[in-house]
View 1 (cartoon, helix red, strand yellow):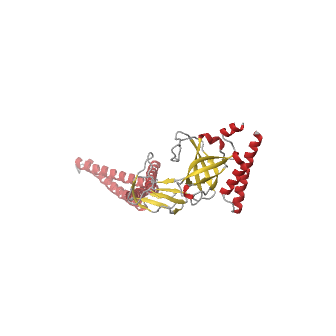
View 2 (tube, rainbow, N blue to C red; view 1 turned 60 degrees about the horizontal axis):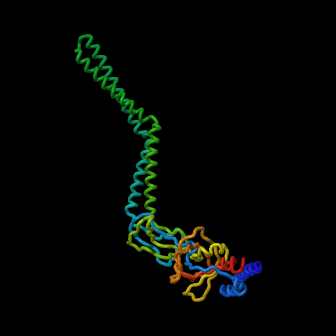
View 3 (cartoon, rainbow, N blue to C red; view 1 turned 90 degrees about the vertical axis):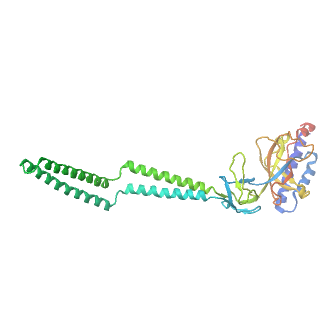
Length: 361
C-alpha cells in the first residue's frame, strides 16, 4: 500500500511537469487545464501547499534616495516611466557644493604652481640679476679696500688723523658684508632645490588634490541616478520638497523595479516547510482576475522563519504562526500589478504529516 501511494504521487508530479512543458511548447492548453488534469490523475493524493503572497518585480522593489540631506531642485521621472541604468532621476539644490569644488580647484592650481616653481628653480633672468649684484658689490668692495689701505698709510705718515683712517676701515667692512650677502643670494638662486622643499610642496599639492576629489564627490552626490534598467513603481517626492538621509528612517525619492519578470513572495506556513523544494511547480490566483491561474516555479526558499508578511484579513487567520518566505517566478502574468495580493499554490510530491499518518506511511 505504501509503495502504491508513493508511486501515484510521483506519477502525478511527473504528469503535471509534462503537461506544463507541452503547454509552453504548443501554447494551447492553459495552466489551469494542466493542473486540473494532474489533480484528476493524482486523485486524493495530489496535494498542494497554499499560502498568501504578494507580486513583486524580479529585482524586488529598490528604494532610491539621495546620499545627502537637502531640497530637491528637480525630480525628472513620473510613476510608470521606464528608466535605464545610470539615467538621472533627480537633482538636489547644489550651488554651495559647486562653489566648494571651484574653491578647491583654485587652491590646487596655486599649490601646483608653487611645486613647479620649486622644482624648476629660479629663472635665468633672476640668476643673471643676482650675478650682476655680486659684480657690483665686488667693485665697491675693491674701491673700499684701496681707500682703506691708503688712509692707513697716510695715518702712519701723519698726514691724516687716526679717526679718518678708522672711518674708511668701517666703510670697507660694510662693503665686504654687502658683497658676502650678494654672493649668498646668487648661490641660493643657482643651487638646485632642496629635497625637503620639494617634498613639502608635493605634499601640499597632494592635499589640495584630495580636497578637490572630496568636494567633487560631495557635489556628485547631489545627483541621483538609476541603479538598474526598470520602471518607476512609485514617486515619493516632488521638486521643492526636502529629503533627509537617515539609516533608521529611509526617505526614498522613487522606488524602482525590473518588471521584465514577476515573482510572488509566498508566506509558506511553518507546518509545510519540509514539503516544498526549489523547482516545484505552482500557480497563483487573484480576485481581480477571476479564476485565472498564473503558472510558475519555485526559484528560492528562505533560510529563516519569520512573522507573516501578507495578511488575508480572514477572521480565523492565525497571526502567531511563523512562515518561510518562498519565491515563485511566474512564467507570464505581466498584467499583474506589483504589490497585488494573491493566493499561491505549490504542487508538492511530499505528503503532509496528516496524510502520511492516515496512509500509514
